[in-house]
Image (cartoon, rainbow, N blue to C red):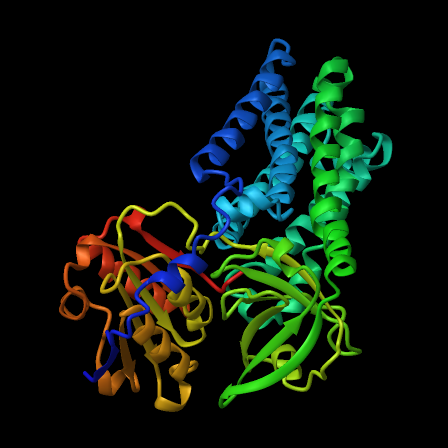
Length: 465
């Protein structure tokens, strides 16, 4: 294995520059993941209580099936509201929980919601068929044509199943990010189609004005949050900050940096390690907003992102012209120097394009001389991005910088507890930040845990939304 080191060059600057830049926005509100999960669970319990209070005496198979259908339907309807809220890009959630974790919650919750919606549909049809003494096919036709808003709700379930299919692990990687992203907008249509059915046929709401008002409040609240943070806020920021492309520079083969200028960018309150969803207003790119991390500490009047050629959209960025207008949604992400720290020593582990946010953290995260280490994994010397910048930062901050360069068959596995412990003295006493391709990040996280760093001190950001 070949691991080269550069750094711990004392220049007298110490940690002052990095620590000052990394002070971040300590006063920003951050939601704690456990608190968010507790609120979601409390809401689910309230839904169960609503079902229980509105359930009459159950007698016979038809009632049992219909009762099971009602509870799965209520939970599915509540789940849709929760899924939309998780993806509403609410700043306290984005800063405290993190976009990648929210996306994982959303994906896992989506599978439950689709399952509950399908179960609700089948159980209600079956229960009503048993109660009416008819077959399932006839009851399906009767429900869709005779009950108010049921046909719209059936379409909503089919839309949810379709979105679930395109999000399956076997299919999702085959779709362009933009295609998958825009197909997800059908979830909004599904929520709208199903809402009327809930109130017009749900016995819990028909008999209780309080329950109806609560449900309206839940859905209208989520709709307002979505409209504000996903649609109105980006427009407001675009008008306020007037972001434009300043220049495009080549960093490495297939890797470019886009420098953006604008007005009052400090009011964006962006932190190193965060990302924006960028919409470049050209003929080919205006319709798609893609997430890219800041690759440098935000400076007065300037932001920088660095993009690797991974597809049509990223390839077109290399042809951006100075002056191109830009709409940026964000900042997003909890992968920041302002998050809670448990240890003063810091280890940054980057793989491939994962160096992008970690380069900003390497410059900004508070750490004393000798307490900061960056391990950078790349396939070849040509794939090393920001090499000059990283070595300058390492010298200025008296930090350790290690490269692991070469194909796997030559360098072996750099992410084992033994290798990491040999590179980083007192490894178990570090706070670790990991960013890179999924396989590399999983291996690094596993090795760090095996080396004695508890999960609460390993911060991981995924590129898989």
